[in-house]
Image 1: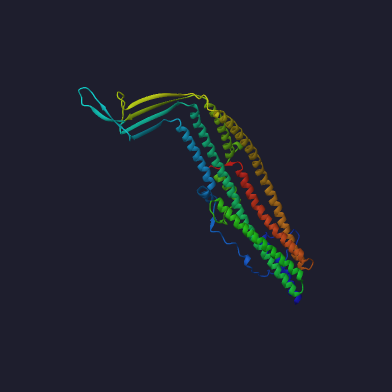
Image 2: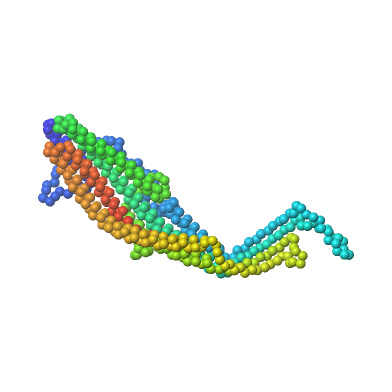
Amino acid sequence: MRKAHLLQLLLAVSTTNTAAIAQPLQPAAGTVAQPPLPPPPVVSDPMLAPVPPPKRVLSSWQEAITYLRARSTDLRIAIDQVLQAESQTRIALAAYLPTIVGTGTYTHNLLTNALVTSIPGATPLTQRVPLPDTVNGNFQLQQALINVQAFDQISINELGTDAAKLSVDDEKRTLALSMANQIVAVVTAERSAEINRVGLKVALEQAEITKRKQALGAANGLDVVRADQNAANARATLVTGDESLREAREALGLTLGIPEETGVAPDVNVNGLAESALSSCRAVQRLEDRADVAASRTKLEVAKRNLRNVYFQFLPTLGAQSTLYATGNPIVGYPNPTWNIQGVLSVPIWDGGNRYGLLMSARAAEDTAAQQLEALRRQAIIQVEQAQRQLVVAETTDRVAREQRDLAAQNDQMTQTAYMAGQGTSLELVTASEAHRQAELNLALQDFGVVKARVLAVLALATCPW
């Protein structure tokens, strides 16, 4: 009877919830299926409780895009830079539009003398000079007629606005890629946390069975220590995995502009993230059409135009101005108010070398912009090629990881069967269990790595005008 009871306990070793971690293995052709085994012992541990859910849960890709539009600080900064560029265009236009300035002055003289004016046949006239109180006012209108440098600056600043708008589109593409990666990271961490709990449960069940075997005289103290060590390793992996999950949730929240843990709803189709990304972005055919490359190309054009604009500063300018002046102390015989119009020709002769310094700076800025564009093109070419290659590598790695997981599961099951029959050691049992648990984690990472590679392949050559 004792042997029969011991055999029943040993049979329970082979049912350590392997199916909860991996898909059940199909028996090979020509083999006879094993009869169902007794259930494993019931174990209880506080660490088997799942990680508390976050307060905020993301339910769809469009909801994430809505959060980005409303709360992303990086996107807001990029939009503000567009507003700054537009303001520079308005400032350049103002330099060519007429200006009207009105001024008024009131003067009170503290020291005056009495002046007596005698006119024959008339009563002498006494007045204070200078007048104790006087009021003067004038309006001045100025208009640039010919100013090539100021007129050219308007179109240059308009090009700068176009470059800023393209930078916003590229920022949206970068944010969409980062958000997709963070969503995948959260789902991956959720899956890893589940696997870690199943692994801990398996380790606890094995430890419980080993202790029962020891009580029956079929195991020694070393076997118990090894089983407890396996459980301790599973606990350590679980703690690390839970913290990784919380950090992934917090990173997703920061990406969306929410300073708290943000999870992903279980019904979100992670495998469809690439298609969801395309719904808010648009694939382009050429590298030159990618927003960051187009923005850099526009900045190079701005640098070229700025260099030409410095040469325009050597040209003379022609302007006109008109002044309407009125005073409370008019000159005898002069009209009051007075009104004049003037033409102003300004010919630059020497400014201490300021324009030559501007030429040197503009040439260096043009070369810098050209080198930045070339470097960005090279980097973008490699990014696109790596994204396409990474998808192939990820799919191949995922297939290999799946094979490794299946082999690890099979090895774990066979090791347990051998241990049950007294042909293996507790060290082999623990080693096979840890290898199986690690293979499950690797497979989860590779599964979602394929999703990340697909999203990267889609957004590597895309623009996002949402």
